[in-house]
Amino acid sequence: METDKWEGLKEELKRKFKILEETTEDILGETSDGPVKLGVAEVLIFESPIGKIKLTRESKPVVLGKKEYYSHQAGKSARTEYTYSDTEFSHKLKAYKWHDDEDEWKEIDAANLG
Image (cartoon, rainbow, N blue to C red; front, top):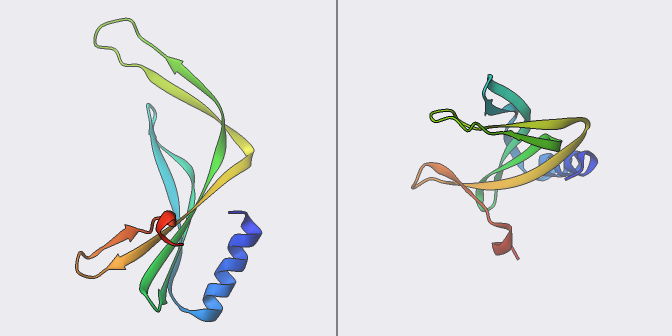
């Protein structure tokens, strides 16, 4: 979802529903050098007629290349290095619904919406 559409959606939700929480979280990935920040997740939690809903927009740099290093020695592991774009980002929107009986967020499947 493009940035301008995401901002429009947030404004519309703020106008129609009570916003419970709005945060930004880092997306971390594990590499051979340790944890690395891969992107940012914007989280918006609001109260709707069907219950608490959480929208998450993940923004990550586009992968430009992938290089795999193999070891032919016993006991040595293979590793993969990725090359990321500095200017291009991919965005993914996920929706979750809060289930009180299970006390956790469950992802809403887009195929079941319509």
